[in-house]
Image (cartoon, rainbow, N blue to C red; front, side):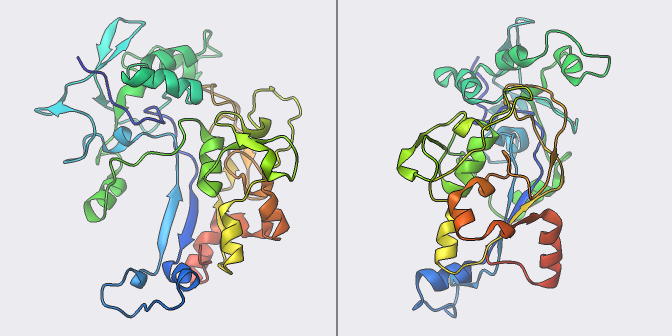
Length: 322
C-alpha cells in the first residue's frame, strides 16, 4: 500500500498552541505602497477593511481537513482510507482513523524528526518517530506518555472533521481552504515563529551584526530548552524583522500573546514536560520579537501585548493597522 501523505512539516496530533492574533488593515498598506491608487474602484481589493491572522501550530493539514470534500488530503475510496503506515511495534499497517479525542499527543517534531517522517518522500516514518519519542518508563498512573504508548491506535494517525472542529470547517465552507500551502521550515516552534515575524531562522555569532547571521533551522541562538534548568544564553536576533518595515512605513502594529502556560515543551524532542508560565513581557519561543534588535531600536517593545488587549481594542474599534 501507499504510505500516509501527511503534511510535510508537522505530525498529526500535537496540541494546538495558544493563539497569537494579528490584525491587518490592507488600506493602510495600500496607502504606504501606492499613495496614488484609488480605493473607490468597484471590486477593488482595497475595500477589504481587516484581515485577521490567528497563529497556531502542531497540526498538519490532514489532521483537520484530510477528509474535507474536494481537498487534496487523505486518499479515500468509498469513505475508507487507501493508505497506511507501518507500526514497528505491532508490525501492523495503520490506516488514518477518525479521532474524536480533544487531547492528542502525536510525536516529536524537530528537524530530524521531520526528515525521518518524510523519509525521502515515502512519508512512512510518523509512527516510528512517535514510538521513539515515548518514555521508556511510566512516571505514574496518569503519565500521558505512558497511556499514549499503550494505545491500540497511535493518535499520530488520527484525524478530525466537522464533528470536532465545526468552526474550522465552517471557515472552509464559507471562505477559501488552501490545501497546497506549506510552512517554509520543516522544524519546530521557534524556527516557525522566527519565519513568521522575519522570514528567516538564523544564528548570529556577533551581537548586533546582521552579517554574522547564518541559516539555523533547528536551534537558533541556543534558546532551545535542552539544558534541563541550566542558564541559557540570551538570544540576539540581529537581522531585520517585518516590524521594521511597518515602523519605517508609519504603519502601527500589535503582537498579542495569550497569558497562561506555554503551549508546548521547549525541548522539541520531549513528549511531555512541566508547564511553564508565559506572558507578553517574557521573550520566548512563541514570543521572539523582544529579542530582535530592530524592535528594541525602534522603541516598539510595548507593541507586544496580552491577548486580552486584542479583544478590548477590537470591541472599541482601536485595533492597530497590523
